[in-house]
Length: 606
Image (cartoon, rainbow, N blue to C red; front, top):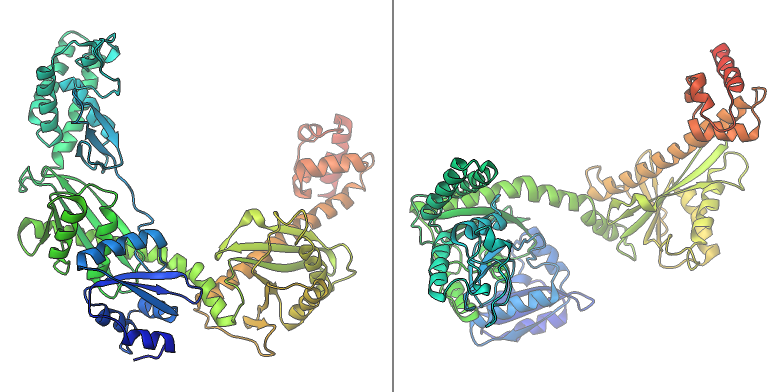
């Protein structure tokens, strides 16, 4: 067993052989993982044994400095407590459905005397719900059909003893206007019963009524209304196409499959209601679970905290069937069967969900995670490799550009969590340095930058975690002098020399060389190259304008104000050289005679 530290070693000896929840903490006391166990003693010890572990589990264990546990009466209680603690602490290494979506449902307010229909994304125990709706089927379209065919109300107008004036929906034959006392309770209840059958997947009656109305409107030459009902029929056909004929129409099942590459995981959910495939959704999982069972269980708990439970959940055979069924019954008061599909149509649906999860894992999750490897994970790795005092959330890189000391400029580019924050880029004109003195130019730029700290401009120039200098040991030493001059603390400082891609720090005379494939090095290269690009762009702009100004001075009649006007309008000498007389006259202060002179000058020069 790995001896993490004496505190953990002693705690492991005291673990009970009962169900419960364990909470892992880092050196700052922050909760980084919450798990449940049938036997706490066995489960928690697994983390600290010397056996091989998945990469993410190993990374988590490296960060564990302490843990504590809570004993529960049953494993179901542990499951419920684990779910609550994950919601409370949002631990770094637990599954967190950051990209979860809450899909819309149609709610029938069955507790009202005259039930109405509405669209909702929150499930409560105060009515009957149909859905979720996805895959191009809009709840609004479904409600539109219900009101057109069955005249059930979709408004929230209260119904009182005093009748109200019928609204437009009544006159358009879309509501029986119970608020105006124009229909009895039994008649309205019959309409609601038929609407519930329709929402449950029985479309035949609705299709017949819609077709009859469409033909009637067409015969009466009310073609706009006829076309409207034709569109409703088309939507109904779209719904019918989603029906899986081999499934019993009464079955409401979610089919859930997980795929993992042991670094990342993905889950696909196929939703079937009344034998109709409502749609499919995939999720990327952030987890450090020891098993697929734990990962899938954690996903299911979080998913159904925001979605309605179906009658059945079809899952892979490693899922904890009895535990999940008991939890649903105790938590939601609903008997939901967990089906471990091994053959037949449900296995075919599970295979489909597995293929969707595999596709999402390979094409979406890996791509997203690769981006994280190139950004946030690279920042974390840089901190560890270089022993930085801070996680380099805000990195600033500085570069100097000039030709023989002329038009000296500096650039500051900013990366946040490893990605460019272009709105924070800044440019500097070097004002006090004579000639091509790279060290002095860097010092001037850094002095001006650091003066922004603790000033009224600090909001625009927040304190960086890491400053990167484009250059070698000499540039780093020059900036170190400015740090000491300004008494700077709490900002890490390094330099990156381009030729051999050496990293220099303040803690060692030797450079650090990383593998060319290392994401941390690639991120530093992107940062340095961006600073170089930004400096070169600014230098070229200034150099071009300076040359343009000196050329314009040679044209008789073009004074300082006209030179400025021409430079502001055209920007480069090439654009003025190719401008027509008419275009030149559009510039402020340039008449036709002067425009002719400018035009002729450049033509002669050419």
